[in-house]
Image (cartoon, rainbow, N blue to C red; front, side, top):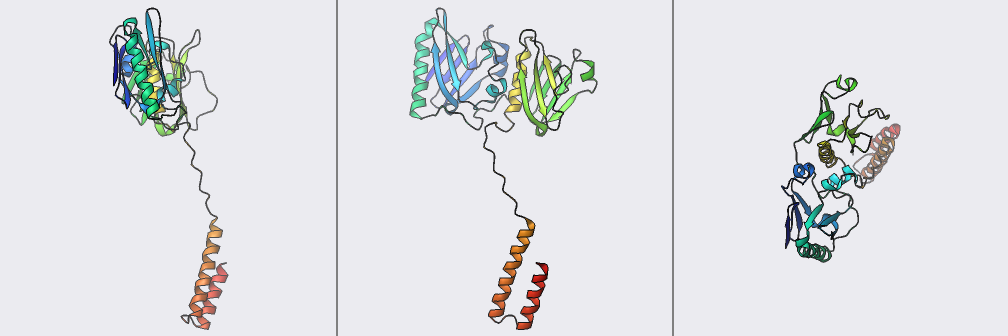
Length: 286
């Protein structure tokens, strides 16, 4: 229905989904190029906007809270050049951008897509397998295990234990923070039954320390891939079915047995003597 092609990338909308393809221009960030093409279902959108500027404008998509594991994992901390839901639009394509916005908004209205949060991911997260080298480690994820291989920049205290392997079933949460100012960033996995006191990332065997170099944002892809396979934070918690006390269960069963014996006695299947003996046996068990 609508398409806009720019150096920064190409956005295509067919009425059901938006296909976001990063451009090959040298100014397109390494993060967006590595993430690759995204397909965003219409139901994951909360809105779309276009902001004009003197030299260039910007298309922006707003996703429903909880729809994308990447946005959840990064928590709004991705720098603007790395945001896959923005597209720089050259001034001679403002009319096309405005038409694109109108088409998406009309589809949202026609399909009556709500803008409220969701309790399950509507995007799959980065494709697997995935391996990123940045900071003091290489982090690899195949969908079942995280593997952390330390490099020469790793602190001896952390590297001494060797390569770290963590099963997805043992991970309860994942954190990604970029380096900011004098504070280093990190990718950290919260592991079940691990000590609650967090060591600094440089000493934590479940964390990768990041110093703000070019490849650091790529660790957010690992965080998103893991997040996509963890329980959704807003998913409804199933109520536990209370287990009936086995003593109560036995008592009820014995009462039913007494009623059955009484019916057998009344219909003449059991003699008086047989009924008395069977009833006494049940009563002893009670």
